[in-house]
Amino acid sequence: MEKNYAYSVLELIGWGKFNVMMFIQCGLSWSTFEIWFVNMGFVIEGTTEEWELDTFTAGIVGSFMQLGLMLGSLFWGYIGNTYGRVKAFKTTAIVASAASVLLTFAPDPYVVGAGLFAMGFGLAGEISLGGTVFYEYCPPSKRYYMTLMSAFLSFGAIAVTTIALLVSLYNSTDYHNWRIIVAVGSAIEIISMFFRFLMHETPAFLITQNKQSAADKILNIVSLKNTGKGLAQVDHASASVNPNELTQELQTHKEDQISTKHALRKLFKKPLLKTTIVLGLVYMITHYSFSGFLYFMPEFLSEFSTSTAYAIILIQQLCGIPGVILGTYLVETRLGRRLTTNIFNILSGAAVIVFCFGSSFWFVVIVSGIIFMIVYLALSSMFTLGPESFPTSVRSTGLSLAMVCARFGGILSPIITGYLLEVPNGFYISLALFCGAYVIAGFLILFLEETKGKKIG
Image 1: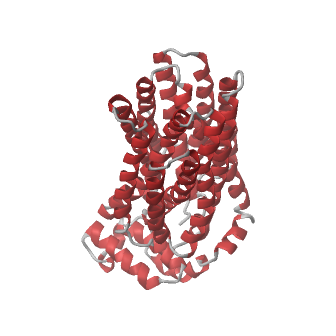
Image 2: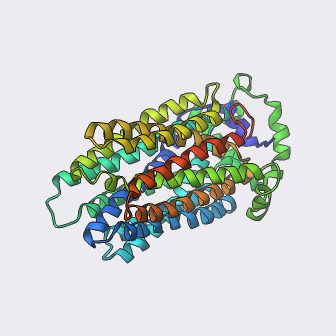
Image 3: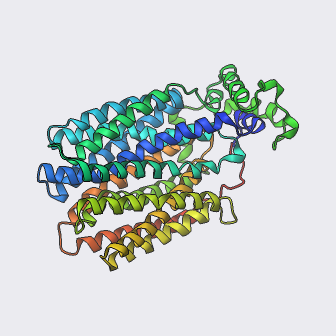
């Protein structure tokens, strides 16, 4: 069982204004990630039109973002584990902002590929470190908010899809639609970067680095913001943890101070070996399906006009919000994290297959809307289960490895799907692969332990 002094103190302080602020700041990093993730569909469609690329070639260009995400996951995991979660978190925003400008003014597909690689490299830290930072500032009894934070993914997707719809309706310039959509995304990325510099390092990380005094200063800031009192004045009697544990945990926190090399060794030994492998496989195959279905949605809707297709995509993303809200509720019921993720990954696979059996406007809207609601529900519960499956000392590294696996699936997806869409019945084969991946992921989840109510930090 993992212990960290910071988590008990955060529980004593309780949820408050500071946590709400962190919830929004970390959530916005997930929103910007999703803005660019959804943007890939418009970029692939736009490069196909501007330079007359086939879907296979466009898919290869799109895979550069996933390659950047994969390598970035390794890099930011090391940086976050060695130099600090927040220090790395700030740097990722700078990298992503610079890449967004490069992508906006790319003169050819090669520069688009380079811009997407740099973007993916920066965004890898946005998604993994955003969750880690919020988790390590969150009182243990409120960690189900990790599931609710997935709503920011939907907000980002809705924002960029709304922008795309408006651009498709009102763009009368000589600039291609995808460039204007990317330019607006770039402005959002740059604005979010400045807010990142107001954040403090997480107390849990500082303690693993044997910086108790610095951790106490941050915890005092949290206490003042949440309760109006200094840390010494917090009422221990009202807390849901035993204050006597604080001394015990303070004495044992030095055990958490390990290098990335040792973290990797720990991840690939019992008792974490099974967790590392299963989560890696689940992240890989679910992101294979999610990336392919999202990236090529404009292609799947090619029989509709551009504005109609973008309106359908907007409705799909709106359906993600009730999915996240329902997921937030379900992970705290008897289903817990594990069964919620299990059931709704399997249902995601079943729903994807139904998408094959109709092409009318209302059929596509209703079925694809249900698909996105279920998929976002499964993703949000998985984003709670993942961090809770690793102790603090290896969490950044463990989640980074899972993200590397996710990006490997993401690299394969646009290439394989782009190729299949060029062959007879490729549409149906693509959807069958998406379905199979979700179903397999659902069953793999059963090999993980339930983390609801489990004291892990």
